Length: 171
Image (cartoon, rainbow, N blue to C red; front, side):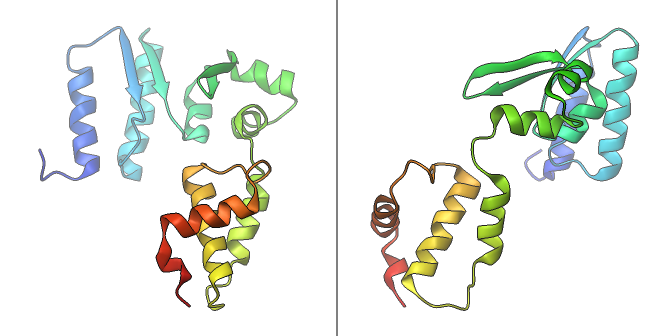
C-alpha cells in the first residue's frame, strides 16, 4: 500500500471503514487526496447512507462540502464548541448565507482579506532584508497561524525571524 497514491490509500481506508456495514460511520477528512470523480461518488455515497438511516459523523475543513452534505454542524474554536445546531438555523440566527461566513464570524481571529492583500502585495524583486523578513512573517501567519499581528510586537517578530533563519540577513 506504500506505493499507492494518497487518493488510492484514502479509497482503501474508506472501503475498509464501510466493509462491515456499520450503523455509525466516522469520517475524518474523507475527501483529502481524492480526485473530483471519486469525491462526487463519495458525496453521493454519504447521502445514500444517511437516507438508509446510517449516522455519518464527518470532520472536514471543506466547508462547501459540509454545507452540501450535512444537516447539523458543530464548529470548534480553540478546542471549544462555539456552535452546535442545524445549518439552516445557524444561517437564520447569524444572518449569514453560508457556512463559511458563519465559521469566519465564530472562529477566525485574523482579517483574512488583509493578510491576503499583504501576501499579494509582496514584491519578490525588492532584494532587501525587510521584504524577506516580511515575507517570512506573512508565510508564518498564513500557513502556521503562530503570530497574532495585533499583539506580537514588530521588533519581536523581526528578532524571531532573524534568530530562526540567519540566511534572511543576506542581501
